[in-house]
Length: 192
Image 1 (cartoon, rainbow, N blue to C red):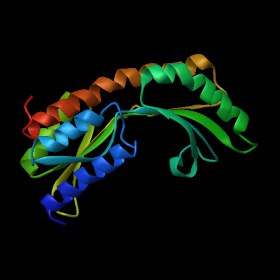
Image 2 (cartoon, one colour):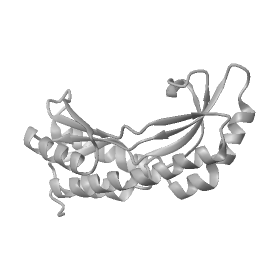
Image 3 (tube, rainbow, N blue to C red):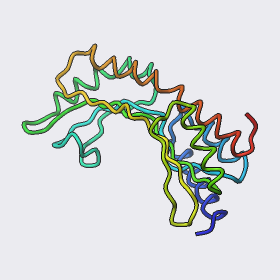
Image 4 (spheres, rainbow, N blue to C red):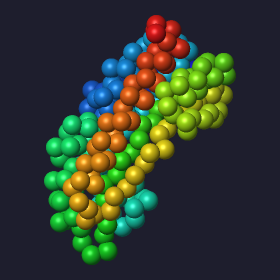
């Protein structure tokens, strides 16, 4: 697939997911600004960080678990995580685990050239993403992934205070993704 076609498909997918309510509301506007700013990059997988309540047989098999509750908003997290955790505990059958997970921000950025990818990596590192790296897409262009390393799981039952600390950690992670997206807008020709 050629760069122009891949970039166009990514923007269409972002618009479709936005219309369906599947885009992280915290960063939706920034994602659109970055993706529309110029032709040097586009984003794919992205999340500003979230707290989720799961139930399943394996703590490390997110896809095999059921997500019972999720939020990207620290204030909503503070209001709802303890109740959602209590419901998950009540729903867990013998041999089934219930847990609350802090999942850090992640962003994949497709860059038009190696030089542009280097500028994306600089943005990621300056924004606090120590775990940022690059690989080559099937189309032959570099893809940079910036991901937080702050993933935490709390097995249930747990005290509400421990769960609220995940909400506070989520709030501390948010500025990283905002900073990164604002920097990328400048890399892609949209100012900043």
